[in-house]
Length: 142
Image 1 (cartoon, rainbow, N blue to C red):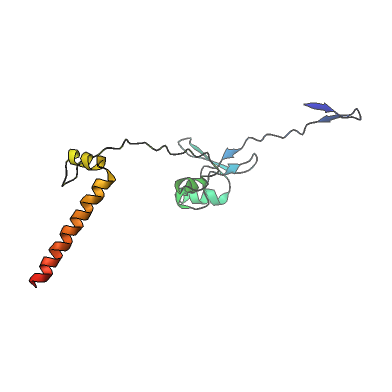
Image 2: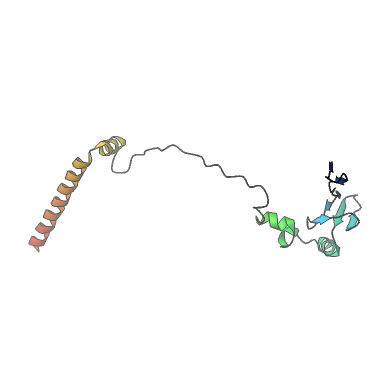
């Protein structure tokens, strides 16, 4: 990509050099070319380590998920979630379902729901009056 300046000279866009990095078999961190140590076992499985620390811990059969500085630990303990793309959890909308209660059937519940507020208020007042009368009788008997 080239662009011509007003002076007539050509300016080139800065090109960034691309380095092929590999991942450390233990820590999961990037290993740049010319760095790290490669271990090849008898069964021809190869492991690349970032440094001596990673290699020693691997040879000690330590679990990287238990060491806080490794990427496997961070994945296991849900760290750096904002860095990775997070998917929103979809909420399943369950349709409302009316169940009959212990004391009343569905028909009775539907009838009460469809009552007018005035009727409901009158019924409440009557019930309160009855309770008060019962309380007076109980007090009179004592």
